[in-house]
Image (tube, rainbow, N blue to C red):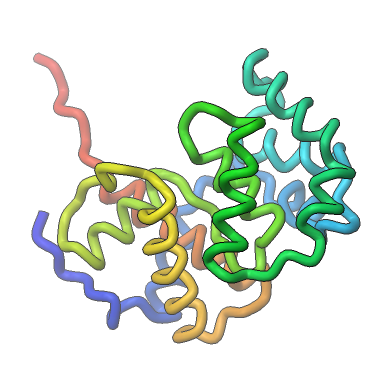
Length: 195
């Protein structure tokens, strides 16, 4: 697939068009009702947000055990990170801290970071990574390493688009996420039908 979209092409028209492709089964009210400043965050907020991210209230036993550990540590998390800024080093400290709860992969770790720093750290998933790689690197592949550096590259790209399109509120930033999700799903290679 030849890349015909450049970063300069991402504008409000692109976002408004592609956000229509966002999966309507996600109940955005759960997301917005539970995303709250860290000092007000409750264990119930965390549970509901991770259920929303998981697209179901049924979370595997292993993931739920990790999530319970995180919820049990919420007072410590609030004390530790309440006054944490948004420098790369401070964000990386939050991200690294999350591995004591979520040891496999990094999408839930990055979602934990998003919950704590939603005003600066967008949601990460395979679809938005695919969009970033397609627009910035001209390839329709996921990053080889979905690691911290890949996330920071995506975060900087996302925040540049948010600034360029004057989308600063959490709802406006979520519209960018929805557009990237829809476009990224479109970019995903299709499986060939068997004959």
